[in-house]
Length: 359
Image 1 (tube, one colour):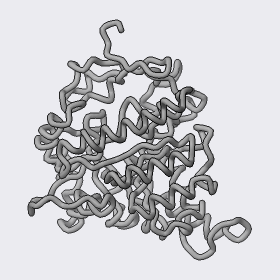
Image 2: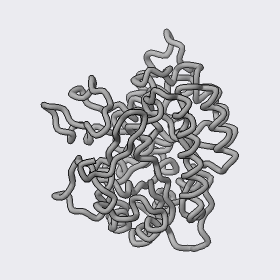
Image 3: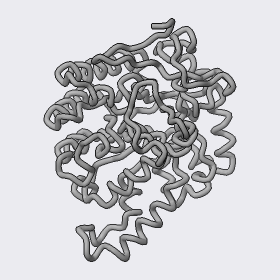
Image 4: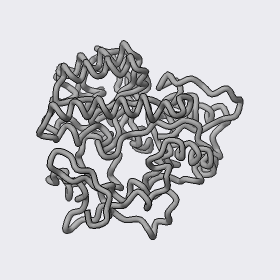
């Protein structure tokens, strides 16, 4: 259409937003406009080419979230034809696990999306992909704006049970709930290809992306679900870590004063729950690294964001060395590799060289 490559699904047209495929381009050439495949480097869509791009960047392993379906499968959630949507969820999971990850099973980490509009189908799909080798499932970071039950509801308990038993962490990628942060965007309905407001630049939302996961973290800390499912693990994908110390300090302060008249756990501080259940993920967060021990050094992972606009490709390893320059080597090893492998139950490559994980 008009010389652009587009997806046609459920009566709507979905472009590939320019910012989703800017790796290798200077910021002066970035934009929101839809692009064609030849406008991207092949590593944006070809798993073999991406391995080569990872090698150039010094990245060993990658966990790839979907683009057209949405980070948490929101495109299929919003579809009118739910029978077709369910088939599409399963098809994407099969493609990513059986085809994309199979290209380099020691490099690509299997992830799955879920048909969250139906809890029974959600549980069934979680069980199916766990059996296929999925290491994590992507879930909306903000289910309530989608019209779904909150994290405080018992509605999701069967899913948390499956994920706990399968040792399959729940990945909450910012924006996976299709909610655009910022008061200027709060009434905005998700429309494919339309990410701007008449009086507010999209830079506002980009700056505030991690705030979605701040809200989600507090919801989960006070939900009681982490006590009910002691093995449940939560990955705050691309959420940054600089905000975590303050949120934990504030949560503990509120817990100390307000737990007596509400249905809140009397015995466990929110900060202790965080260090047992959550994994912070950052791309370029010097402030967060300075406060890494307030977060938990064994709960921080490095991300790459290839091929999106926060990526430092092809200089991710160089940038990691800069931001980690004052961090001891043993802590660096945890942050750039060991924590991610432990979180995702993804075996180490047979080399003594320190490597980078990537999302």
